[in-house]
Length: 364
Ligand code: KG4
Ligand code: ZN
Image (cartoon, rainbow, N blue to C red; front, side):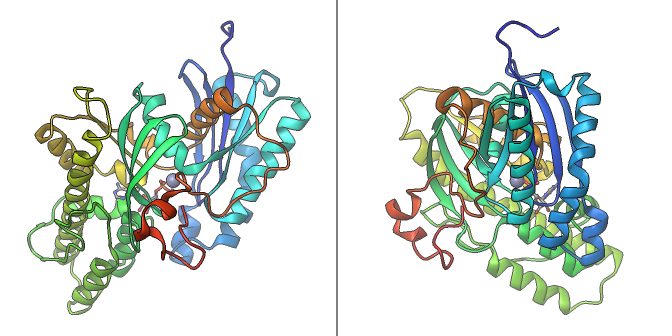
């Protein structure tokens, strides 16, 4: 039975390779969480082909919605708000999700909310772990590696970003070089279990630097050059995986340590310090354990959402969309999907270091 004043929210996520539909309540119950991934397709092509991904979203989206309704035991006319990722991401997929969401909301005569995918990741722990504002967020996904002070809804201050590649992208490229499949992060984590993390000494760009930015392109190049000097065996693949995972983890922990000190000076003294991790790479158990150790060292609370809500999902979009709806109301139906949509649009103005990233400025 629907409780009085409780809203039922559908979240639609199609910005990358997963077609994800969730149904949640405003009381933070997750009634359905359907994720249809394109991994078999991706293995065939060795990565994501945007056009193929967009067509697959189109094929899968109807089915995913029906499955979500079946799982939640709800009818479509019981949904109160439709939310969908409006960017940033692969534009073909974002268009599929946006057009679908708008059509559904129009036909049901209910509000539509366009959601920033990064905001979805950023607010996930508020849905899954009941976290209160403010907190420091380490957002590590396939396309982004950023540290953000999340002060309240809509007030996000970016403390750092990657100057080149993202951590997830580095895992994916490394797995491709090792020939162990896609997506790379979970495959590297699996093969690293039996590997020796000290076998290969890889570079750690930006390590110990005072500003908490990241860089992974040098690591990617060095990893590829080192691997190419070897004839790969099972043991070597395991040692390479363990060494890479440890190197990426060391970089994330070191940069987060600098950011935690910055963050402490931004919030009310004696307020509990919370470190939240989000995004696909946050599902890596080794990285989670190292961040937990850092939090203990820094007297901070460490919060990591359940693994299935670290990688892309519709629940995070539904929750961020609901918070947005409460504060800003519904989105106009003339909203245009955005390939770029920074969480903190002022970042490149405030911090000159962000100025020269990408031909069109900061991607996200
Ligand atoms: O957040 P996400 O699902 O999609 C984006 O918004 O990018 O993140 C996907 C990324 C991929 O690069 C994938 O290799 C990485 O997250 N990833 C992992 C793990 N699971 C997913 N990286 C390391 N360890 C994992 N267990
Ligand atoms: Zn994501």
